[in-house]
Image (cartoon, rainbow, N blue to C red; front, side, top):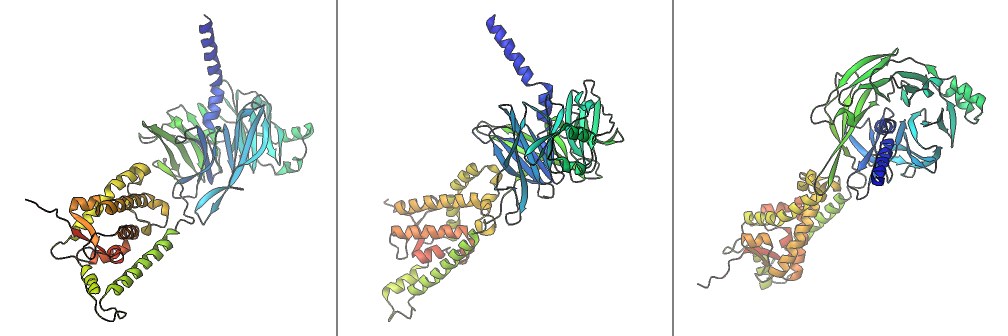
Length: 530
C-alpha cells in the first residue's frame, strides 16, 4: 500500500512539473527574432553529457547558415532578441533566475558572426522569482513577466524596474509579451480562450523615469499601455515581427498564420508541410525582415550516434506559401585558412628546382665534370626504364589508386558520409584547408603505410599487386633514405597535383620523386625455378 501511495505521489509531481503553462512557455520560447537576426536553442546530440547551444542565423545571409553562438550545461528557459543583441534566462536557483546577454557582430575577414564582447555572453542582473511566464526585448531592453507577480520587469542599466501591467492582463490565466509592429504587446489568455491585448508604443517618454521606482511613477507607467481589442479563436502564440502584429492559430498539426488588423484576424496562409518537413507543432514561426521564417529541428539516432538537422522555411513578403525547407549548415570560418597555399607553392617550386638540379648534376654533360665518367653514364641511362623490365604508366597509376583506396575508406568513416565529395579535393584546389581535410588524411595515411612497406619489402601493396618494386637507378636495392625521400616527395605530388605533370609526360610515369631520390620502379618477376 505504501509503495502504491509513493507511486501515486510521484505521478502527481510529474504531472505538476509538466503543467500546460510550463509546457506552453518552454515550447513557445525556443526561438526569437529581431527581424534581422534569428536565435534558437538546440540540444547538441554529439556531446557525451547533455549540452545546449544558442544558435544564430543572420537574415541577410543568403547561404542559409547558422553559427553556434554559445554552449550551456543548463537549458535556457527563455530568450528574446532586439537588434543584434540577445538575452537568455535560466531556471531559478535560490529564488533567482540568471540572465545573460550578448551582441553579435560580423567579421568580414572570416565571414562569420561572433558574440561580443570577449567572445562570450555577459552576465546580467538576476531576476527575482521562481519561474518565468514570458520574455521579450523592446528598444534595447529585456522585459519579463514573473509568475505570481502583477508587475512586469524591465532591465534598465543594472536594475530590474517594476512596470505595472493592466489589470485585465493579470486576471488572465496565461500572460505573454511580444514585440510586433514597433510596439511591445502584453497579451492575456483567459480560461475561456479569449484574448486581451494591450500595446506600448514607445518608451522614449519614460526614459527620464528610469532612475526611480516610486509607486507614483509605476502608476504613470501603467497609463502607457493602450488597449487594443483582439479576437482570435484557437490562439496558439503571437509572432515577433518588425512591421505588423501576427499570430498563429489552430491545433498541433493544423495551423494558420494570421495578421491582426483592427482586432480581427486576416489569414495569411495555412501552415502545411510535406513529408520532408517537420510537423507544425515541432517548430515555430518568427518574423524575418518583412516576411516570416519557420525554424524547426529534427533528429534521428543510430546505434552509435545521433544526428541533428536545423531547418528553415521562408515566407517572403507577398508570397503565397512558405518556400521549400532548407537545411541550415554550421558556418565555416575562412579566416587564416588559406595559409596552406603559399606553403604548398613554395614546396612545389622547391621540388621542381631540386629536380632540375639533381638531373643536371647527374648528367654526363655536367661542366663541372672534367670527363665523362662511368657513373655519370649509368645515372643518365638509369633515369629511363630498362627495355627488358618496363613498369608501364597505367600500372603505376593503378598501384597508386590501390595504395590510396583503403585510406580513402578509413577517411570517409572518420569524416562521415557528408564529406564523400570533399575527399577528392586536394588542398591546392581549395582556399579553405578544412574542406580538404579528408583528402589530406587519406594521403598522409597512404604515404605512411607505403613508406613503411617499401623500407621493409621494397614495394607497397599496390606495387605488389601490380608486379612492381622500387630500386635505385643502378638497379640495386634502394637505401632506406631513398624510400623516405621518395615517399615524402610522392606525398607532396599528391597534395600539389601540378607536380604530377612530369610523371604524366614521361612514358614510364617517372617524375620528380624518382629524379630527386635517384630511384625507379621496375617490373618484378619472381625467379622461375622450374
